[in-house]
Image (cartoon, rainbow, N blue to C red; front, side, top):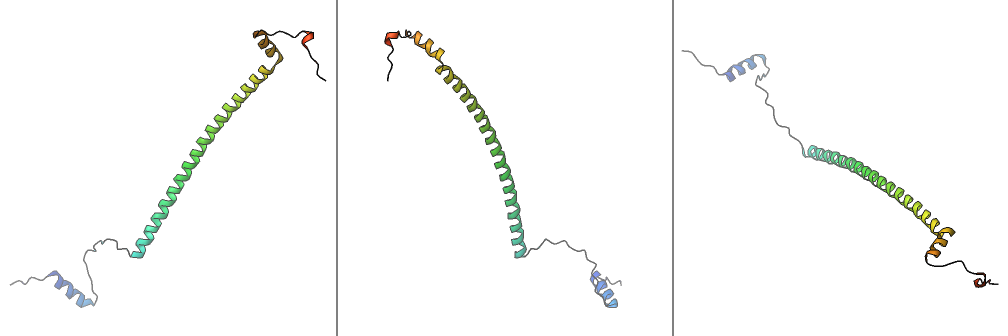
Length: 121
């Protein structure tokens, strides 16, 4: 009769001969096991990374907004300077003696006669 020998029995015999324990089993890939300290450090690093990313995006957004505001204010300044120039020209025109004389004639006024002029001391 043939005796069936188990693989574990063969392994024990082989190990008994050499005195070295040999395990020819496939190494199972286990999951990562993190300690609470490692989890805390990873979480802290993630928060630092996210915070720096948010800070970078926020600063770029602020810079862009400031650029837009500066451009809008420069356009407004040019518009106001042009308006100021036009108003100064209109004021000079309204104060000119020729314009005042034409406006007086339009209202029916005429130059005073020498008898109407009074000289104050």
